[in-house]
Image 1 (spheres, rainbow, N blue to C red):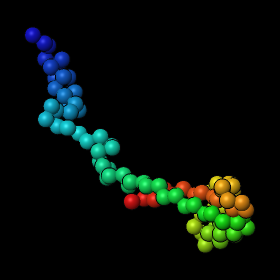
Image 2: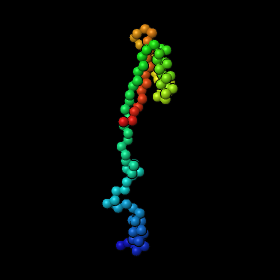
Image 3: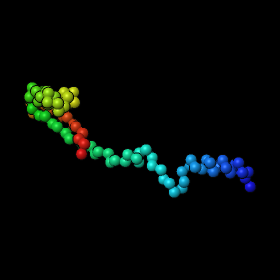
Length: 92
């Protein structure tokens, strides 16, 4: 048999412990909103080097994409033609 003061101490501690019925929410469960889905969209510019460069700079001026977001100018199979690629992640 347990001494009375030990039983009292256990009862006192029990009030701070979760009961078997309670299932306390974790911090992640409290704000359980579905995360927004991201989907890539790929932009491909093909043309002469000056035309692709001007287009990249115009898109930068209107705030669509920074110049540094585009790939370097890459040659295509056609002479005097280059391409540049931009991949953006859209929230769906």
